[in-house]
Length: 323
Image 1: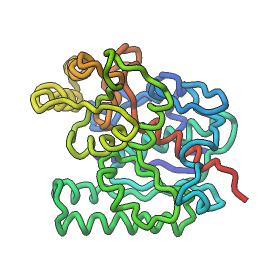
Image 2: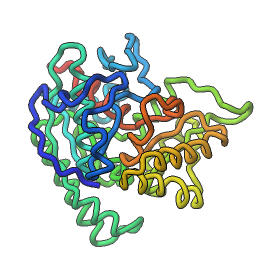
Image 3: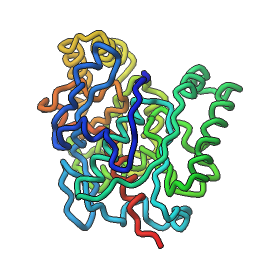
């Protein structure tokens, strides 16, 4: 889904004017999505918050500690550009805009200016990758080549880190990031590390902590999280084919048609199916699923918007002191 909307961007960015606050209020145009394909979501962060030495208000991520994964020693540790500029690349206007709104809003809650950023977005690339499915075809090779060119453009423009808000693209993160000279954040890494830091306890005795992944493109998007969560000791569960066909996808369809009650009821069923399987948290791994439930719905306490973790890590990376 592509959002055709022109928004002026500046260091403090007028995007934040459309937010009433980080702690749970919805955006002014929240009701537009079901009528004109615009997206609606809450600016609230998910309940899992990055743990650092300093206290972070879950509703207002700020004063982020540079000891996070973005600043730890590694192959990219000494290559960040001194400008502290975040390079944002994507194939979804919805994801990119959602990321920028949170990035600017959260990074300015302490009175500081938002870190500078450069954005390069091309929704046509996603269509080319979708048409290729899981196979590496000539179309997908061309699309990945375009994404690598955009990544190189951001590097040469002075980006200190690269961020892809579009979760779908992370299925090809390795191919796109190959040879990158600066940190290229992976949304699965960001979520897995925050879940690990949260020290969750298994719902059922004798089992591992289980994390559910709910997505509209279940196979490709789940790939973004499966290996990352597994490496941290989590067991990953996702809906079976019947649940996808009868609850998850119909929920999104109902939302796009303006049937809010139907969309919410179907999404609640989808979440309950995972929760009864002793899942601790459910990752809402699609922009289409974020914003369906109202802010006060108790089921949201068991849900994570993975973009939140990516935003927090990007702010940390951009705020690392540089000579």
